[in-house]
Length: 134
Length: 175
View 1 (cartoon, rainbow over the protein chains, first blue to last red):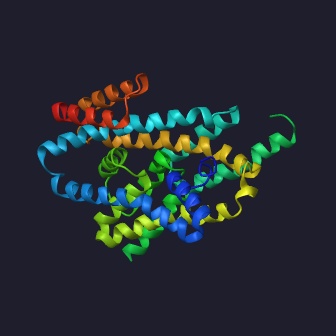
View 2: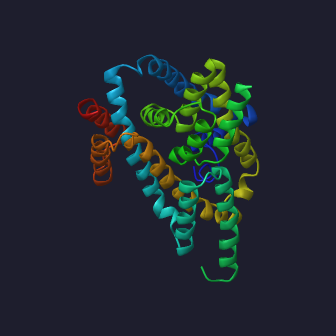
View 3: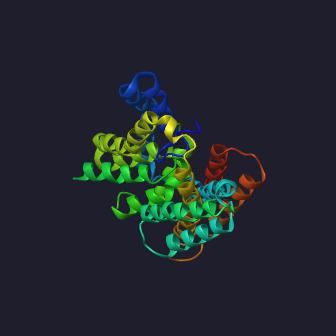
């Protein structure tokens, strides 16, 4: 679990890949990832089909307009949950604000922003620790 | 080559997200750029993904792939979003002991975490614009729904699927 978390990608898949790999090697990892995804893929296929046919129904449209609203609090809630782990210093707040401004007001690609965050993080916190002041 | 494009786009999404909702900013950019979905549809799929089993990444990939290029599209997009996990993690499993508690990784993540948080907040703002502002004016009824659900979510331990259900009912009444 603690190994799966830091890696990029879908965490639950990372976990299944790690387990699969440890037990059966590469093939085990592949099998684990597929096994994990299969139910989700089937469920979504059904939903996607229904979505396509029902989207324009008046009542369904009303329900969806309500559901869309809740996505924003869900996102804010997710951001809030990241707070404790991510905002550990003043520098982290600077990272947060700069990233917010870049993403909200420019079209700079998101992957680029993340890579920049990783490199700057490396530069900043490595420096901090070698100075002995953490 | 829409299949290849689906695969590559979702591989990018897989590489640059850390599971869960931190994927939304990247997903939003990719599917809007290629015109695969509208902003409204992105929000629908996020809600759907929260309610169905499986991770957001896989759910989005299947949904987008299926709607863009049928079953093959769904397979390509899903494989794409899984590729980073598969390749990186197999490597990691291989070097498992060396990477445990790796300092470099931890330093990089210290930079990435606040950045992801900023990106999430930014995408919340962008999506708010497309949801609450419809050319003709502010949709006050929708803001009320969002506020009610938001307050419930922050103040109580209500689960996300229940909140979505509540929003659906409110939407039926007020929408």
